Image 1: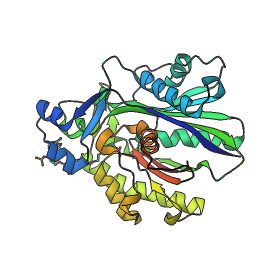
Image 2: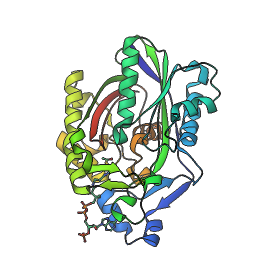
Image 3: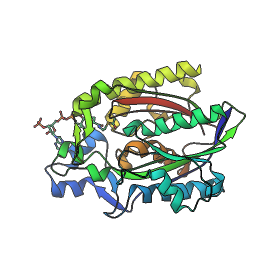
Image 4: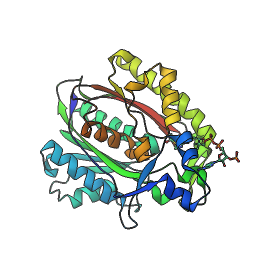
Length: 312
Ligand code: ACO
């Protein structure tokens, strides 16, 4: 039992924080940020704008794109690590705001920067089991809530936003979410985690080293698992953390840079929202075309890492 992608949507908060905005409030430069990360700007949500607000906006856009209503969806999975409320889930808040009248299952997954793949992994399992018809996957993050303006080494890296994808059951196993692989290593907790007072604790160089090794590993593993080679892949849309990580992963895999989609320059690292946001950007700008095969590898706090293959 397979699935296919039938709609996508995204939402970015109105406020853009440029590198110059950071230069005004901390000891940093546009030159340092661009050369180390490739980031030129990021979106920051308004103080009263929540993860559920952003997720709902992206979900609404995806429903419009798919020409269906919320009651045509029979499961909602939200990838987020930054919800304002410990309960209930962002997914049920989205469902309520969109006026769902069916009591469908709705829940969040926490996989940090790999959250989008964790959500897709769940959806693939439910489609394979044949027990759901249409699943909406949303990635939504308000990373700015964790940005510590006293820590220049992490403050400049992150942004806010949300993306949503809708998949429908199909008889083809060559469309939609074709494959997923997700992994984690709890022994590496100390490398990158949130603190109880909502700050990002990160060993930057160590995180960098792990990312450029584990993302290519996951990409190779999933290509082997699916029985394909890099020639079969139309686009790599990697988790958008840092341009140097992306370039290094591409070099290790031997992928040409013109097959790699970059949005980190505009969005920065939006953690679990990164993949859905980048896919929506690629559709909106006519970069990817229906029928193309996308490889999406990711890595993040946990450690967590993995990859997915999606035929769009
Ligand atoms: N502006 C100016 N200088 C800075 C800044 C800044 N914003 N941040 C750090 N520096 C300084 C440091 O203080 C240090 O100065 P010092 O040598 O006087 O002590 C110097 O720059 C070099 O610091 P490093 O940490 O060695 O810089 P590096 O070249 O490793 O780059 C970076 C740092 C960009 C964080 C890099 O380690 C990295 O990309 N790591 C991966 C982090 C990441 O992407 N995390 C996201 C979450 S996980 C994920 O999504 C994959």
